Structure formats: structure tokens, C-alpha cells
Length: 272
Image (cartoon, rainbow, N blue to C red; front, side):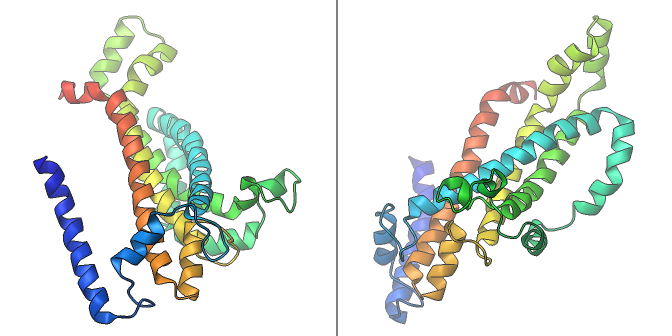
């Protein structure tokens, strides 16, 4: 109970200061009151500015993020395991990784828009003018999300593999383990905590990147698009409610990965 009270203390102070400031400003197009934003949040299925509900926009954004993030994990984890385990592969990939890693994912958005234009997954499969979910998942956004999520996953996987204790590897080999069993029973479990940390960081970056990508021209759905559209119409209550939802969804995604990590790497805490 004490922890809960301490956790809600600062949000309550922020809400109090916000309400006082909104009353003093007395301009809803600049700073809406707390109850106006709360009124939007408690009706998540209501249509907003003829663009759909909060739920619809969040589903579109989350679908883009999850798909791009899964692609980053499917490439980043196997490649990280190979680079971390084999010196030759590490020497081949290290230079290009070090060049690309410092580039901000958002800097790739104009490039992705120029290359992929407004093509969607539905277009790839030859389905045009569709109103399905795949019709809202642009290839350029997937590329940017993939780029943002790839490096945390890849680098943490490499770190996890390189951190495997030599005594564990040597003991396994002395006891007759072949390379396949060594990888499955020793290397992968030892690297798993670092891999899950990379997944958690990568998912957070992917969520931030998609919000920025949806604010640019070419997007017609998503929580980032809703923020820009509500800004253009001076609907600040919708804008602030959207920002709050971004934080809540990002928190849920992060804690989801953390929940998996705590249940698959519980042995690490005991080892320490």
C-alpha cells in the first residue's frame, strides 16, 4: 500500500498543477482542463474527428510496431548469435554495424518515404484500395521500425553470447556435448537475459519511432497521425489524451516483455 501511494503521489500533483494552470489560462485550445481530457479517455470507442476511435488508431499503430519489431527480432537474434559466437562473422559484420548503428531511426524516415512511397503490405500481395488492417501498414514504416528495433536486439544478443563463461563451455565439451547441444543447453540459456533486455529496449524504440513516422505526410491512421490531425484542428484535449495513451501503451508493452523476462531468467538472480 505504501508503494502504491508513493507511486500515485507525483501523478496526482501533476494533475493538480495542470488543473490550476488550465483554469488560469482559460483557453481550451491551448491547455484543456483535466476533465475534458478524461472525458475523451473514458470513451475510447467514440469517433474522433471522423478518423476513427482511439482503439482503432492504437490497433493500427500497435500492428505496425509488432510486425516491424518481429522482423527485427527474427533477423537480429540469429545474426547476433552468429556474430557473438564466431570471430570470422564478427569481423565481417562489425565495420558496417558500427557505421549504421549511430544513425537515428527517425533520420531514415524521409529515405523510406522516397523509396517505399505509400506502398502497403496489401499492395505487395496485389490487393489495392483495401480498408483492411494490412492496407494501413506501409512498407516505409516497417523499414524504419525494423531499423529502430534491430540494433538493440542484435547488440544485446552479441553481448549475451560473448558473456557466456568459458568454464561453462569447456565443462560442457569435456562432458561430451556436441556443438548443437552446447548451443541449446549452455550458450542460448546464458545469453537469454541479455537477449530479452535487447527485446525490451528495441520494442520501446520501435514504439517511439512509429509515432514520429505517423506524424509525417502519407499516413492516414495511427495514434501519431491523430496527434498531428488534432493539432491542426486545435483539438488539444484529443492531442493530450493521445499522448497519455502513447505512454500507457508503451508501458504495457515494456512490462509485457519484462514479465516474460522475469519468468524465463529467474535463475540469473539466484546465481548472483
